[in-house]
Length: 271
Image (spheres, rainbow, N blue to C red):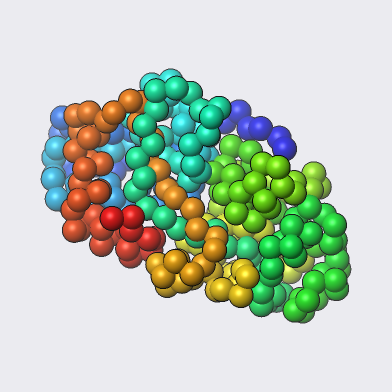
């Protein structure tokens, strides 16, 4: 697969501040990385500012899990958001702080509401061994299957490979697949093309047909029950043990009832 060279510095930022711009913040927590973790990170930052106004300033960038991990390792950001697990190839000295779990959904266009896929069927489709919808049980259309996947820097791509494709030594995604830099771009591509299939964080399944996997619907309810087999972890990665404002923020996420309520609103709590 093609490895991206996107850096957080090249991406747009969203500022979340409790005080007017003219009021100086005591400290700033900068985050970059996973487009899957970003919606949760944004909500947690807002919740923290509501609980502790005028104490910290947040700056949130995206770019993919590998970007976040590399950014924090190089000191470019305070926290690298990651939707993939630690790897041996990651830079040394990093601390992976798990904040939540969520699901990865296989999605098709609403005009092609495939009801269910087995792991073998997912592997056959995404590896390119099955190329026409007429060969997929339950498909409502015929014609070429248009694959949409994430780039190598994506934690969702890593989770998809590990959960659905059999891990590093399993089946590989076909080189003909269209690579997208974010969950939102995969979501848009599948919405716009009745022949499309892709995979997204379940937060981005809106407007698509979320396919049941191994007979279990990809829903938040099933994720919380632990029955959906496509679950993965969300991490906030720090350079060494978190300190100062970052340590306080992560402790609040792990221990505060309001933070847990934010996580449970659209994700799965790990506490």
